[in-house]
Image 1: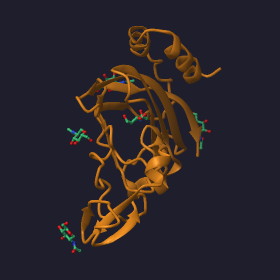
Image 2: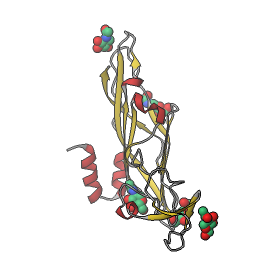
Image 3: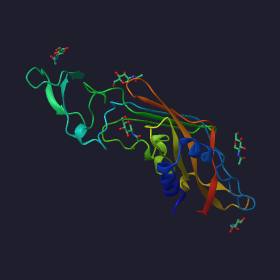
Length: 219
Ligand SMILES: *[C@@H]1O[C@H](CO)[C@@H](O)[C@H](O)[C@H]1NC(C)=O
Ligand SMILES: *[C@@H]1O[C@H](CO)[C@@H](O)[C@H](O)[C@H]1NC(C)=O
Ligand SMILES: *[C@@H]1O[C@H](CO)[C@@H](O)[C@H](O)[C@H]1NC(C)=O
Ligand SMILES: *[C@@H]1O[C@H](CO)[C@@H](O)[C@H](O)[C@H]1NC(C)=O
Ligand SMILES: *[C@@H]1O[C@H](CO)[C@@H](O)[C@H](O)[C@H]1NC(C)=O
């Protein structure tokens, strides 16, 4: 059984106080092979906004089937009888913004590392990245080089455990003293705190945490 599925099981049974305490003791990084550098993946800024009425074209069948009135550069009252533009599916790609009539602010995710790497996701219809269900967008142009930061979590509880996996792709390999190239990956569970306003919009943050490096690979 993986640590994640174990934790998920424990979450269902235990108080959040227990899981938060558990998450404060992550594993420590491996020792790199002789003469090889090792990265330090410290997250200094973490912010996830998930509105109670953010458009969700991946997990919500209602949203997938909702039509809106596209009028010029924006959205008007989605009543086919009065719509002076055209009735279109709100989940279609390339709509003017992804906050159609009747929907709240879109979902966003920002992760900032101490070494300068920043990851930003926001709703873009077809969603290249499904926020809180895996890969996040850490510099779109950088994707080919394969530096993948994946985040998993829930914004529905005041406090819970988030999970992050970091994979340094071969395009970002590091050089050892003898000229060999090496890549690394790591994982961590971290405490996730979500504040809900009166509409149940969730703003989730995490204290500064480190993703320990747990394995390496020669490239
Ligand atoms: C460089 O050193 C590592 C161990 O530190 C070793 O596994 C690797 O084979 C070496 N590479 C070369 C080109 O000698
Ligand atoms: C990584 O950097 C953080 C903050 O600068 C520091 O607290 C931590 O000890 C470092 N981790 C390692 C494994 O060196
Ligand atoms: C449609 O009507 C709304 C007001 O109901 C108006 O704001 C909008 O500019 C109109 N759009 C077009 C394309 O005529
Ligand atoms: C919270 O949700 C409501 C309803 O969707 C929305 O009108 C409001 O703008 C949201 N507030 C914030 C701070 O995003
Ligand atoms: C995002 O917010 C919606 C509305 O509150 C909720 O149903 C959904 O589970 C949240 N997503 C995650 C991954 O927690």
